[in-house]
Length: 388
Image (cartoon, rainbow, N blue to C red; front, side, top):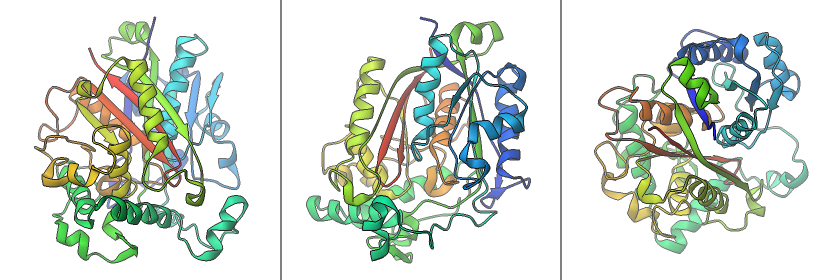
C-alpha cells in the first residue's frame, strides 16, 4: 500500500509563553502552515485536505473552524475534518487523514492548531452556565478540569499507595527536558520539594502538578509515501492508530483510577502497527496534569495497574533515565495552549528525524508512540510513528 506519511512539521516560537511575534490564532496558524509545507517542498496551493480542532472564536468563526481556516488561508480543501476530541484531537486527525490519503480522497493534508489563550487571557472557564451533564458538577463547586483530575489522583493514592512525591517526579522530569529545549516556557531548576511546596490548586494537585497556560500554534503535513519520495523528503510513516472515549464529566467516568480510553486506543494502535511494547523507543504522552501521565503509563501497559508511582521514581522519565518521555518538556513545562496533542506529534517527528538539539536527542529512535488525552480523562488517541 502507498502508505500515509508525515512530511513536515512546524511550531510558532514563544517568548515567556506568548507568541514571540504577536499574532491572532489565524495568523499564527498561517505561519506554521507555510513553514511545515515549505519543509516538504510544498505550498498552500498543494493542500487539498484540512484538519483542525480549536478553542478560539466560540461562539463565532470558531464554530466552523475548517471553513474559517480555508477562507483565511485562501485554499479550497475537498477533505475537511473538524473532529474535536479534546486534547487528543490531533492524534485522531492523523488516522482520519491517513485513511483519506490511502483511499485517494486527498493528496496533501494539513493538520493545524493555534491558540492565543494567554495573550488574550481567554482560558477562564468560569461564569458559564452548567448545561447537560455539567449540571451535576459545576453548581457544586468542582473546578473544571482540575477537579476531575484531582479526584482521580486522590483515589489512585488511596487505592495503590501512590505518593505526591511520585506525581512530583513527573513534573521534575518534564522540567529537566524543558531545560534542554530553547523553545520551552519554563526552563528553571525544579525539585520535588518545589512541587510539593507549591500552592495547592485542588487537593492533592498543586500548581506545579498542572499544565501551563500559554499561546501556541503547530502544523503537521501528511501525504502518501510515493509523493514524499518524489519530493525527495525523508518521511515518517504512520504505522498504527486507535482512539476511544468513555465520558465527558468525571461523574460519568467508568472508574477513577483506570484510563480505559488509553487502554483501548493503544491496544488497537499496536495491533495495527504489529508491534509490542519492546519495539517502542520513545513515548510522547499528554501531561495536562501529573496524574494524567501516571495513569496513561499504566493504561498503555508500560507498567501494571497501580504500579505507576513506583515506575516513575528515581528519574526514570528524565534525561538519561531508562524511560524518557515528553522530551520537549510537555504541557507541564514546554507549552499548553489549551490543547497539546499536535505538539506531541511535532516532537515525535523531530526525534525520529534527529531534528532536535543534540543534548535532547534520544539515541536510536526508530519507533515512537504518541498518545493524546482529552476532556477530563475522557478520550484517548494513540499513533505509532516510525522511520525506516
